Length: 126
Image 1 (cartoon, rainbow, N blue to C red):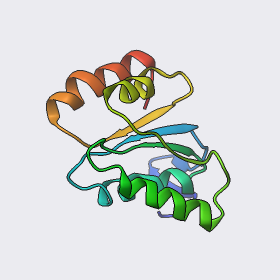
Image 2: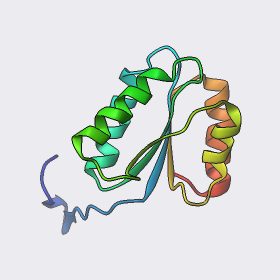
Image 3: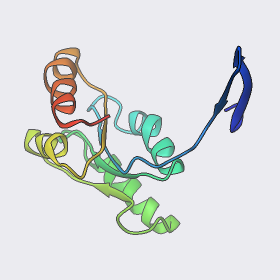
């Protein structure tokens, strides 16, 4: 947030920021905060030039469906904001799909460590 470059961050070292989109991010959101959690991720992904595939909890999908309607009404181009519903098979699809470049996940620690972190590492996702 300090700009595009910083001079003399260390002896003889300048820092330059080059913002480059990474691609498509999968957002896996929990049931207990269906509106709040995606707000942590989606605006940053879009503002930095990425597309998103939102996977809400199958227990509370209506929040994300309504947000997707509002996003479309606001004029976000088709294909930039996407919502997919269902359960673990969709999560597996996001984790294994080579067109998904990164995953944002909020959920249990065991699932995060043993499933999401492991599979993202295997497929080179951020």
